[in-house]
Amino acid sequence: MPSFALPIRTHSNFCRSALAKIRRNQPCPLCGSGLKFKKCCGKHTGTPSPFDNADHDRAFQQAARKMEAERVQRENQQGLGKGIISASLNDHRIVAVGNTVYFSKSWRTFQDFLREFLIGLLGREWFQAESDKPNLERHPIVRWYHQAIADSNRLHTKVGNLLVGPMTGAQRAFINLAYNLYLIAHHAEPTQVARLTASFVDRLKSERADDFIGKLFETYAAAAFLKAGFTLAYENESDGRSSHVEFVATYPRTGAKFSVEVKTRNRSSIEDGPVDEIKRLRVGNKLNKALSKSAEHTRVVMIEINVPDVVTDPSATDGWPRAALDQIRAIEKSPAPDGSEKPSAYVMVTNHTFHNNLGVINASTQVIATGCRIPDFGPDVGFNRLKDVLDSQVRHKEMLALLDSMKTHYEIPSTFDGENPEFAFAPEDPPPRLTFGEIYLIPDAEGKEIPARLRDASVLEQEKAVMGVYETLDGVHLIVRTPMTESEIAAWKRHPDTFFGEVRPLPQKANNWLELAQFFLNTYKSTPREKLLEWMKGANDIEYLKTLSQADLAILYCERLGWGAEKNPEQIDWRMDRDLARADLLRLKRSRDWGGTMRLTSLTVASIVVMSFPAFCGYIENYGS
Image 1 (cartoon, rainbow, N blue to C red):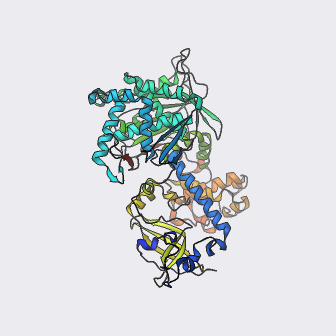
Image 2 (tube, rainbow, N blue to C red):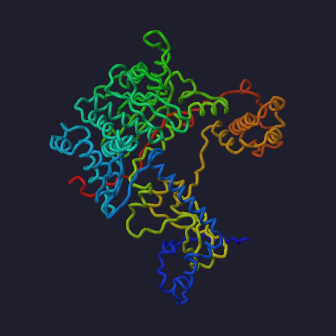
Image 3 (tube, rainbow, N blue to C red):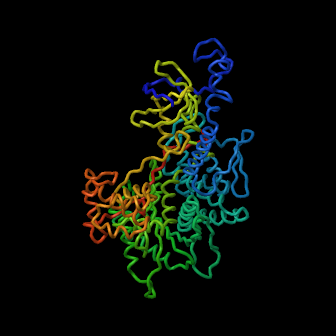
């Protein structure tokens, strides 16, 4: 068995130099023997080495975990659809989209490519003609571009040949439209890319504000479904024989199909004055029109309210989310024009605030997800049983997947391969990255530098340091404290679960007793029925419990445990032994006997999402010249 020593030391960046940095023919810097490094301590760094020979399987598993971390991080940036297809060849960056290959020597970041991609789709002659006009007469897309360049020169910091900094509303608007169109083209059938992109671009270039705004936010809707892993089939807009939705979205994991209709409020500045919320937001009006369209599948209505309001607190109790929810509930209760009930639909109300706050840094996007005539989906839905929550999650798993993706995949990638931008665009000679399974020089108990492999670590954010557990050649484990650079802190905040080159899920906070009950269920869902009954033998309703299946018993066990933790956390024995009989939760029989209910307004079912964008936007210097 390996021994354990626990010296906690702060050491310099040299102590984090990877062994690969030491030249093999130089005198050994570790022990001062005068021998060449490759014939001294360097014998431990080649192939084979004592580390690798000790356990080939462990090395293989480490490589597999690293690949999994790269996949997870790439998906966190690029979504669950088709990833970026790109390569570097002869100083050129190559990007494949549909049946077209693009290349350039000047693309350092994926956002560089996106700008060129959008300008190319719009037409360079048209773009130049619009640029030659006075600013107020330019098309909105061209205005965004020129303000984005000015913002970059004004706000960003030079890192190498990039200008790096936080995104303003104008930068986000321009690059986000480019990314949306890229996703639409990238996921389309190769033979349909030209026709499909042309149908979007023609409307986007329209001088009619309704055409432009409507098509703009249709790109956001399509991109949201694509990033969540849905496949899309677009309706033929030239077919005027009947009304139809924008597209049909299919969720591959279940095969479920959804008819998606997109509605957008074309903002007028006079409506931002003393106008009531019904007239200002027009959510009810847009929903009514969407429900009147023909739909073959379950309906999803996406409504963009397009207002400058910035919501920082995710709540449905006030502001435009409350007003939008009230309008949806009013529409729910009113009959269709022919007196029949309105069809049911999932409703996603969005507000991309950066489009109305072009000069604001990191303006957020908000989404409220609810149902029209879907009683168990929405932030105003109350649950008082864990089983009801679980059943609801199964019924609405596709829309919950969409909502989760909208929360996770809000970022516009800046790298082509999913790498953390703080690492990909770091200045020269940064300290070596701390990666599980790699070998570093660390101080032993006497302060001597020795090679050791990083096995585990945690970040102390407030102290800007890493506490790492290292294993030496002879199996001794040491804990070493290492300072972190500002770039490393930023990279960890961006992707904390993959920062060390392995997927390490972060602890989740339970916001109410139902979420706590779900946490318990992840542990006890496979517990044998006999063991559950043994733990609950002191319950007043034990005879009823004996009639339940293992699955229902596990759910009820965790439900009561969560409820008891909420009511009397100090009285609960977490082992669920005899002392638990004294806790209030075991005196609760069934839902009719519970003394009260908890209303679940958590994102685990549906609620308000506020997405603030990461502070990274890279511009090639003098890009606008």
